[in-house]
Amino acid sequence: MKTAIKTVDLTKKFGDKTAVNHMNLEIYEGEIFGLLGVNGAGKTTTIRMLTGLSAVTDGDAYVFDLDIKKDLQKIKSLINVSTQETAVAENLTVKENLKFIADIYGISDEAAKTSMQNIISSLELGEVQNQKAKTLSGGWQRRLSIAMALITNPKIIFLDEPTLGLDVLARRELWKVVQSLKGKVTVILTTHYLEEVEALCDRIAVMTNGKIKALGTADELKKSVGKDSLEDAFVEIVEN
Amino acid sequence: MKALAFASRNMKELLRDMISYIFCLGLPIVMLIVMTLINRSIPQMEGAPQVFNIEKLTPAIAIFAMTFLMLFVCIRVSSDRSSAFLTRLYASPMKSSDFIVGYIVPFAVTGVFQTVITYFCGEMIALIVNGESLPVGYMLLSIPLLIPSIVLFIGIGIIFGTFFNAKAAPGLCSAVITAVAILGGIWMDIDTMGDGWKTVCSCLPFYHSVQYARYAMVGNFDDMLTPLLICTAFAVVIFTVSVMAFSFKMKSDKK
Image (cartoon, rainbow over all chains, first blue to last red; front, top):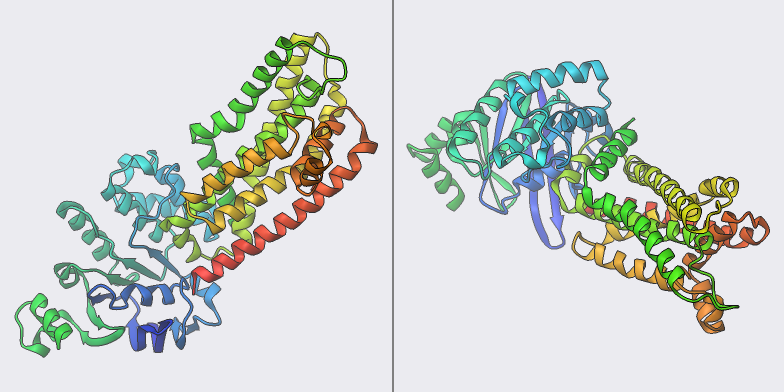
């Protein structure tokens, strides 16, 4: 399996506080990788460093063998991100938002058109494609935000708590979208919903205090601490 | 391409906000009409300041209208900075120069359009009220000369939008709008207010902006040159500071 992301002693400090502490991790191409942890565990900081939104304090990380310290601009054209908060241009329509993102990633008009049709179809955005983003419900906005991350055909997509604040049905709809990416795009997913991780992720890393405490499939994690549910396993890993 | 895509987005955001029409176009026109009516209703004394005469009022209002442009740039930048949208763009291949160009171009185009509309209304008022046209040739010639003022106000807007949040930044812009009105000599003749006051006004760019716009309107290019050069120098400095401020903030956001 080809490595999509590799971190080598990746560290982030804010003053005296160490948010990510010598993280060593390998994520493979095409897998859906879950980052789990309580609030402040370092999940979002890890994603921010890997997407160039935060500078690395120490250590290094490689995205498809490109060094995030030296080749960030090249890396940025290979990845895309959907942040915790919905990130859309409010006065632009759904189609305009998608076209705008395609343009800033330098995608040709023709390729953008094809990609837009595919995304609108796969995320079922057709009925709202001409509506301004600010008129959409939270669920639709979140779906648009993820569509904006997919329009550039990234090799890696970072989804930071993508289903936060969504109702059960909207969440299940987004699960389908994420599942459809399996094998095609490397997905790094952070979430607090353990059933989401269990349903979607090939492998899971549990983070506490900026360090990876456990790594493996859901079954491996449960087995490692002798628990039947992922929630019990998670609590056991985090507390011990 | 990236900068133009961002500029296009910012233009759409501006054009689809009704408030921007009210402030950037409606208010200057209303002010032109109201001040002309006030000017007609007060007795004209010999030697009294003529700041409300249409050939002096029109360029002054055109400069004053640019302060609302500054307000909208400031709101755009501060709103973007406080939203996750800018975070998404920071993670994209956009460079700081793309952001700067993307913010400046749509507002500069709007500024020129706003000036054209203000001058057109000034001409209409001159024809209707005074029965005589403004010097149209000079008026057209003066429009590109106002670009340094447009750049100046956009630069101030970017600086405030960069350093202050969406709640504080518009308040600070309001203070600048008031300062421009008082210190720019839009509503009063600075020359009649004493040397001390004139010195204070001369230390800021607003008075010079209004002065050269008024000289350009009547084709007095000799007197126009000095205030134009002073305003251009201010515009270059403010614009440079705004670019540096945005780039600095972009880097510090990533720490």
